[in-house]
Length: 284
Image 1 (tube, one colour):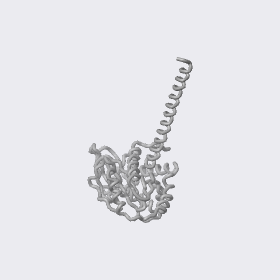
Image 2 (cartoon, one colour):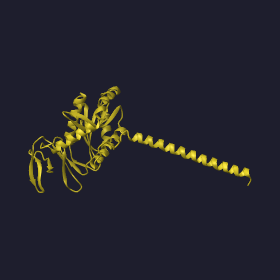
Image 3 (cartoon, rainbow, N blue to C red):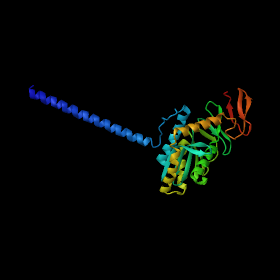
Image 4 (cartoon, one colour):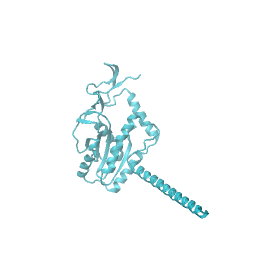
């Protein structure tokens, strides 16, 4: 092999390596771009779970339910709308937190996500509902219809918009079975996550448009500050919940909590029992 042949072979090798390197860099840039595009689309409905206060396992589970609802909204709802997550609404001296709020041209929708696993039962005006876990234990939780009604009253007052323009959605996980719950009405819908999209489409197709695109944006501008609250507001909200949990006032009906004795020892129960069946373990 002559010297020229060696030089030509070396040059060809360098060219091949160079082309391969360029192709590799191009692919890397392409995948970075694609990943960022997918991430941007996902974060339209999926929040960043990192925050100042670490999330508990229950909160992470709850966020998954909220993520699913937001995904359904972005993928299926027609018309002009905006969605807000974790809305802290002033409510007297405290705040009330709404899982999701959708400002739509047909009205304002408040979503309460419930990620229980079991059989759900309750009535529209009962103080508490019940669910039977697969382990056959029965648990009570505050009536979500009442809970969302409180949310809507606070939001209606804040926005100065009549309550008849609000719609309440109680969304249970796919792991629940709604055995004895109220029938949905025009203003209150009780459903499971798998049926949410169909429920929304049926509702929205029957509702007249109330707001123009400009009005939707104007209402959304007033809501936006309630979602981007600082850590002090969040910390106070958590403190208020903790104080309520530690007070001697029943969080369900406002009655006084009294010491009772049960099969497994002493506990705090509502003085309005049996109308109100709230109870709490004694921790001190």
